[in-house]
Image (cartoon, rainbow, N blue to C red; front, side, top):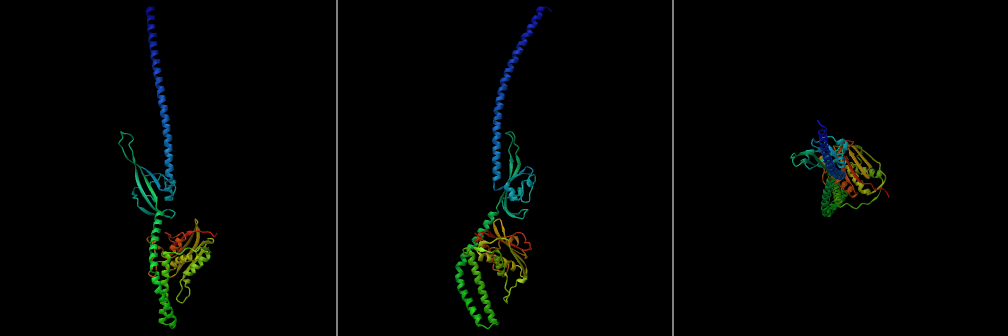
Length: 402
């Protein structure tokens, strides 16, 4: 090969190399421009993504705050029914903590898919009773894209509503309506009955004095007087139920109050002697002096103690205690009788409701009215007392001596 041919081939190779270099430079420039465009798009996308993340965090934080502030309980489960989260209201209603619920599939007070929205009375582990209504709803899984038609349950939500206070207020309102109707009736007939009743009592008393002692006629006259007095007492109770008198507030010695109420509740035998030996009655107080209507409170406590005695006609134990709890005064009367069945607990303070043939059904109703005028109420424990029978409370706000 000649030198001229070699030079020609070299020049051709140099030209091709120059062309390739130019093409590479052109491609690099285009790639650099494309990379710059992509970098700008990526930067803009990252900025938008950061904004969305911030917005998502804000929405999540707002939803968490709303969930925590809801007064109703919320229990969230996954598709397998495992509890994923519970809000503070649900923890309060169920009487447990989130750590005891998370990861579990059931709880004694949760109904899950069986929830129908109706109220039911439940008992928590600490013994307290609540009225709860629960509702259940499945969370549907949305399609991942327009081409994805798969749907189904992705979990569930159970809503818990504590209706205890509403039920209690409704019951108290119904009781007040009954008492108001009774008071209207009693006021209308009290004078019409009392006038002839006083005449019967007066003439029977005169007749008792005129007749020879220890005779049948004298005994019958005394029975008429006693019957008239009892009927008059019932009329007075009816009037007090319907239109209770205003409170006469005074300083009350708790020990003296209990002593007087217990003494008044002990039945008196036919010969006039006390029959207290049949019952073992104990009383104690752990509260300081307070303000209240001594006469009315003594009558209310007396009625509760008398009820505990009457329920044990053959004798038994009765315990009366006065104590403070969360700013309230509690008068606790416990007995060793048969107790109060669950289906009767809400009725025993109704006027004229009684389970004894000789009872009038006004004692506990009057105690309830007296508690209400003091800003309180009568409560019946769902559990047996420590004596084995019933445990009935009078609860009203503590008013210290100024």
